[in-house]
Image (cartoon, rainbow, N blue to C red; front, side, top):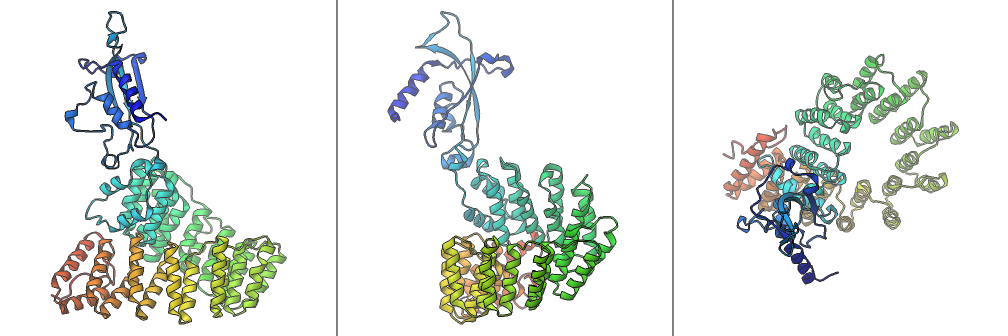
Length: 602
């Protein structure tokens, strides 16, 4: 590669052979014939002076002047100037007459004026990395909607950094971190506008999950209607299922039926609803274990929508989740009487129902019937049976089923390993369970939230707090973030065993990862801190909670209020009250949420 001084010499020679004419007036582009128009860009690696060279061309032509005070003129975005990189392509037009050594090439005749378009070249997007943890943490800590979120997104997310996996990962983290739904909606809308790549239905589905979980149903409907007009390809049955399931959970039976009709009339416009959409409505009631309502809908709409085997399996699954094996079997026989042939899913549901009731012999009988009918069992079927063997303390059968998985040309996945770990823990064989986890790590099999939760539960029951602490440290080192139920379980265990250091460590780890811990975990932490006189720490973590757009519970606030009043910290109490009132203006509290200083506090 040529030296920097050689590059500068070549650049100066090239520049000296152009006679930029400052007296040329800007004319309309249409007056220029194509043979006098040139467009070019400067291609080079990052930080190799592309924008500086563009300034060197624009200044002699008097297109820009040094008095403007703008270095690297084509870098207009704030993030471009801060990072010293070009993100968004910009163009600038200049006029010149070609000459050689200062003499016109036209032998006394005035050479024609050419128009040149200089195009600033963006850096490769692969050279700009966005840390998902940092972005999630920034979004959770931002006081939106009290302050606009758009400026911070513009700063952190240049347009060329967007890609589908980034948006999905951030929304997934926001969902797992119990983010305020308004922030997730703002991020999704910003991504929809600025991303150079089309977003995926998964991004929309995650946004709907966050909104409906926090009961922002009006926002969810508005989003669906906007997407139907602008990006209808993002609408899937999954999006419909998410919204209908949450309406069935939080609202009435009639509201859910009205929402189904509204989906057909306002969202999926022009789409003829059939069996697939009917199955979504059935699933909305079955997932909430509202089997009376599900049967009612089935009986009412069967003449309009022809059910299929999936429809029957959805209802069968609903009966299984309600814990009624008799209802499962009765509906199964009704299903057969209607002419539907049971498939692998049907047998899996029935086997799981018997296993959960401790009827392992009946589950094995169904498994044998399944094989006689030439219905090939999947690894999920074997996993269910391993769970059943563990429930009846038949650890030998659990090992046998696990070892038979490769013989059936199946692969033992994380779920199968978790089932065996659960069986071992249930039989208090903690050492074997830990050995199996080590084996999973060696084979590259992912440890998921069920793995950690089961192992933590087993160690807690064995009374070995050092074992819990050791597994917790390993989990942190692997950068794994547990699910809410595990966080709450760990927070409770640490507080009860006088390990507030681990409770605080867990809270800080979650916050550092961009997560906002669940309200139950917060209540446990505040209780433990206040009980040991660490009121200031409890106050700081309460501020963190409120800043992230999450309500405090009434119990936690009243406890903290009492301790702050006893310590004479009225200013801190008023600050919390002010933050609660501000949050209420954009996120109305539900039952059990703190509403501010009590009458006794005043």
